[in-house]
Length: 386
Image: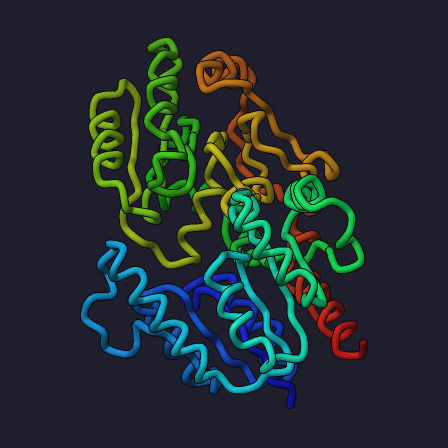
């Protein structure tokens, strides 16, 4: 039985799904070192225990001061992670999920324990282009058997930064989006009207959804201001949703959005409570227009879900999605947030609220669990037989 180590965040849905769908069915002995100092999600802890996944986590060691972020405690936590990594057994494959400095340093200190190395960029990690980080990554690239990215845009950025010297190691391996599977299943068992009723959307209202989390970079505050500039008759036709269940770190921003929602001239619902997964994906099905204007994005799951559910999508032109262009998805672009009112007004003149669920299947075919699983297994098998 091959031993497999993942260095990443044990509370990540992507890592959980990767272990569940790729590694365990293929009989790998899985070790997981989580870099987060936060406790692992309870349901994931139970899953890892039930499936004999060995988890290495400083949060499980009972330390009292993990949440302190001053320089002294950050160094202290780093030393704790070094000590914890030293206890990891020898493994056939070390797989670093998100190519950040700490993960790379942990690998280099323990390199002789591992026969093979996979480095997987997730998106945001490619944006750190400080010279010391680039040099650290290059040091690890020479040991890597494979370097993966999740989307074409990150692939392009990698080539721009590092050139073509690693092309024989570089490939696109995506992560499955569980929400797509759920939307597909729901389309067979429910109706769009039932999904809209679940969220309290009146029959004659047009549903607009703004972003997918409570980060200020989503610009939901600006979106609400731009929507409020529409004429009064148009605003009467709208029911706007602002999902803020995730990323609730900036309480000041959340309060700003709450106050805007209270004072706007259209019906507005802020979603702050977690819902079961099967209910949360009813929102993309119920949505007529999805606003996606955050600062940066490495093709978020929420965007994929709205593409599959055939929401009409407005995207900031500064966000690049070659995959959407290749599959000819129906999206509209704005060059600045100030252009949103005009674009919405134009779109709302012709929009018709659909009664039936219509899916855009090219996005499902690209990100289905089966397709993604086969990508990763092909990569791993090619490495094992080198």
